[in-house]
Image (cartoon, rainbow, N blue to C red):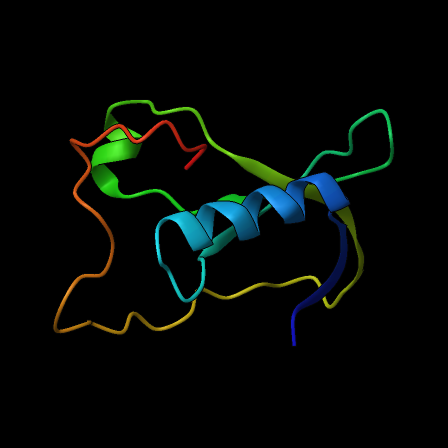
Length: 102
């Protein structure tokens, strides 16, 4: 274990996530966690947002942030997980704009 962090998600954000998943008929959601070297004015250095595809990142699509928090323990090193190759990609085509937040 390299680090432990706590993240706070607002009820409103959770409701938006659940409603969007139901509208898209999804079984779950992938959330990215960003650990920063610097702390913001509220003592936070962790943020979470809905994962984006490479195409969304290249198009600079705005992230849907889900929560913030802070690292409360670390052993000083974090390693990158081994990459697992999936046989079939999941998700919806990126050229559709259904008006949902992600």
